[in-house]
Image 1 (cartoon, one colour):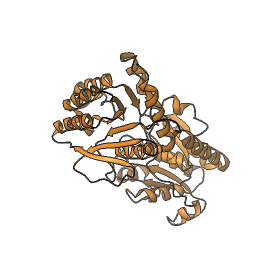
Image 2 (cartoon, helix red, strand yellow):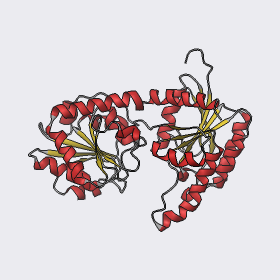
Image 3 (tube, rainbow, N blue to C red):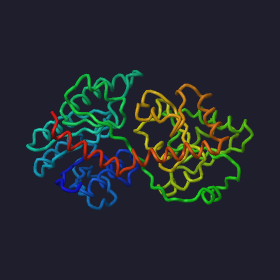
Image 4 (tube, rainbow, N blue to C red):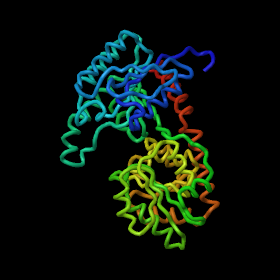
Amino acid sequence: PAGERAVKIATMVAELPPRIDGIGDYAARISRELARTDQVAVYANDVHPHDPMPGVSVVPSFRYDPAASVRAVADRVAADPPDWFLLQYNPFAYGRRGFNPHLVAMARRIARVPGVRLGLMVHERHVPAHTPRFFVMHLWQRPQFLALADTARLVLFSTDVWMDDLRRRLPRTPMRLAAIGSAVPDVGMGRDEARARLGIPEGAVALGFFGTAHISKSLGHVAAAAKAVRAAGRDVRVLHVGPKADALRDALGDIPLIADGALPPDEVSRRFAAMDLQLCPFVDGVATRRSSMMTGLQHGIATVGTRGFFTGETLLRHDGEAMLLAEVDDADGFAGHAATLAADDSLRARIGAAGRALYDAEFAYPVLAQRLRRDLVDAAGER
């Protein structure tokens, strides 16, 4: 912003594009936006090549194995101190089974460098202790997360539902929501052209499903939605964009499926242009950390999602306006929302337009970068 001095920001992330990694994509996009006004460096692994990032200095510094290599980052930071050092955190990004004691040591060293403030951007805290295997990993992942949070001057969360738990433990540490935007550009292809190139018949309802078909999503909800639309007398197609479509194909039975695997970002946008609805049946609810859901909002596609643990107030207050949500275990309610939108063109257009407006106002990367910068400036004066 005019009149303010540039902020010197460094961030650390395990992967960068072209590697397929949601956290790396976020770090690259937010860094490019911040670099429009500030001095930005990214500390990345020194194994994989990265796409060019104009205006951003990329510093290859560490690798996954050996885990102790992250200690070198602290030496580099001490030699060229930024105002803020932001650690993009998912425990599995830095150590086997999410364990790397050197990461905590690195963070503490950086926090002691004069003039440097440590920020923690939490994409994942730790695994839940739901299974024997997860319980064992939880024993070290949770203390590791809490040690990093205790060291940080600012903690940012990709979903707001994690904040309450940490606020009870660290009441004096500033905490903010930092949502994840879409990883896909909107290429602006028209609906008719997009559908014609995929062979979707005129009058058919295209139900979109974006992302890997695995246990984080209730594939039965997708099948229930498609069957409900067909039961209402409509021709229906499920358009899957992403890998591992076999499980979805099994769930759909004789419902026609269009699935061509993982696709380049521009082609993902063209597939979204062909959709009538986006289905987001996350088993733990839609959330501000789900870039796949954000892509539908970005493209103005009416979204049917699930309401669960991760669905914080930021999204709940837009239920019925910018999206329609059903409880995570309510397949009939989910299918009913899909059938309602499929049958009502004006409602579908209204929900889609409201979703796009919400995305542009709250979740587009220029907005996210401005908000992050403001949070950094504000937190520098707190505590």
